[in-house]
Image (cartoon, rainbow over all chains, first blue to last red; front, side, top):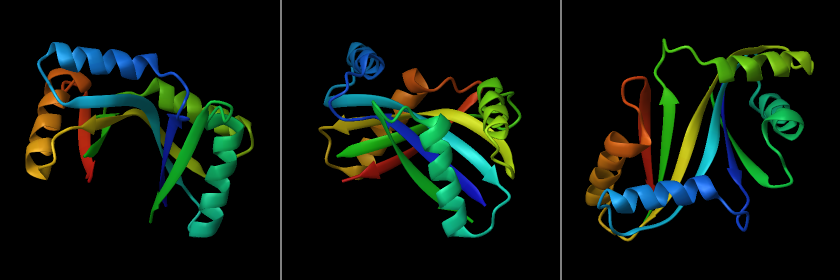
Amino acid sequence: MKARVFVTLKSGVLDPQGKAIGHALQGLGFDGVGEVRQGKVIDLELAETDAAKARAAVRQMCEQLLANTVIEKYEIELKS
Amino acid sequence: MKARVFVTLKSGVLDPQGKAIGHALQGLGFDGVGEVRQGKVIDLELAETDAAKARAAVRQMCEQLLANTVIEKYEIELKS
């Protein structure tokens, strides 16, 4: 089973990297670009085949290592 | 319209950051974790309302700025 984890800054947390991308896009002539936020995506290959157990394990990984839950939120997507 | 862009290393390109995450997860006692790859996710707010035009614009952004197409590939997801 494969899992994809998105780790993004919570709304309200300043994202200078996203801002820099937004400015660079404007500089390249891309108009109509509003807020830009950057985050991380982590693709995991799991031996677990049960979706519920896999999700629980990945949630634990996020809490313990992948995300800094003070300022970041995470989303988990599973693909069998 | 909102767009989410995933920028990940092409398969075959060494991903030391992903490897480090994999080792850290093993160290924390998470067994059954295979390959780990890390990438970037970029969330954009676009003024464009036409999906085809928005996708074309975001593709251009990826080619020009967001992805290094020599070693990275990108996926575009649109949400109205």
